[in-house]
Amino acid sequence: MRRFGSCLTALFLTAGAGSAPQPASAQETGGEVVQFGSDYTLAAGQSVDELVVFGASATIRGEVDGDAVVIGGSAELAGTGSVEGDFVVIGGGATIASGASVDGDLVVIGGTVEAPAGFAPGGELVSMGAGPAAAVVPFVTRGLLAGRVIVPDLSWMWVAIAVLLAVFLALNFAFDRPVRACVEGFTARPLTTFLVGLAVVVLAGPVTVLLAISILGLVAVPFLWAALAAAVVIGGVAVSRWLGEKILPAPATESRGHQALAVLVGFTLTSLALMVPILGGVTFATLGVLALGGASTAVARGLRQEHPVPDPASGPAGDAPPLPAEHEAEVPPPPASEAPSAADLALLPRATFLARTGAFLLDLVLVSLIFFGLLDLDSGQWFFALLIVYHIGLWSWKGTTVGGVIARLRVVRTDGYPLAATDALVRGLSSIFSAVVLGIGFFWILKEPERESWHDKIAGTCVVSVPKSWPRT
Image (cartoon, rainbow, N blue to C red; front, side, top):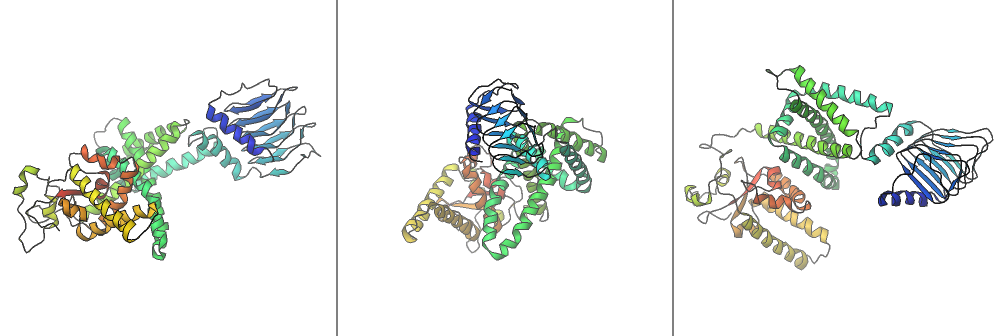
């Protein structure tokens, strides 16, 4: 396969340049031909330097002076045709007529070779058969590489769709409460649910690496990914049901039959979108993230319901709104001998963007002095790792950082319960997500009435401003 690489390079360069496809029966003489999405025929007596056909079939009756590559379709080399280089067919079969010649290698992956007795290429003959590759290769070449998940002309795919629909309907009946919880999340806060799903996707890799570092954590990795897979499936059922309920008229009384019909309608609508190139890939990614976010938020709500919020007069603050800054005096300071409770802290006014930014800059200077001065390290990746560990550690220990102590800020849970180490860990890892999307997660404080960043929303926390009459820590 001496020129196969150069031929594929021509394929991608031509695709990047946006060249128009050649006509289905092009009469070519010389040059390189790259064809996308429609069948190609090289007539007898004509010749080309190189030939690449992507996502369609090719018939060669003339001469190819170099390589001929057909991806995602079948190829026919007529008796008058010849290929002086390599003849490669991926995702389809190759038919060689009597009198045809191939001077280089003949490679067929995912298909069969039909050739007359005694035919032999000038190079090697490689055939990987029409087993599983015959189903997988066209799905990759005409599906995933085309930006869609469903290829309508693959018969096995319709069987897979029917099986998946049956599974969705069964899960809708068997797990009605989790699916309902996900649907309620989509309806109430679709943007937040999507952001949570996006954060889970971004953090899945780093969390897996952190768990894999230790022996005990490595045992938890399969369970983590099994949980993520289950979340995607249950969330996918909920997405189908949510979309179906938006299209169907609301029933007088909700029934299992109406829920099943909603799943069927939403599943059908989604399947149609997944068949369209480009749109199918975008739809799959968007709904997949939404499904994961819906399942994650439903689990988080379920865990919090196990600890119901008590009455504000006798316990944690629950969902009581924070007091405005001008009424800080209405929150009496705790006795001098007692530390403020989590419920007291949750009632304090939310910290401003400037105060939080100032505290972070102070922490950044402190970590820089430790990193470059005391530790004398020079790797940027370890600097950011130390910055995250610094914040998570101090949040877990004191609920604030050194910069937060100076700026009189505290990180608290919005439901009034004490901030746990797991809350600090989730908040710290989620802050990576807020940062990588151009810092939008941090600037979200400016538009959010409760002044919560994305990682605050994910972790269920907020940052409050402690009055001067209160102890700093």
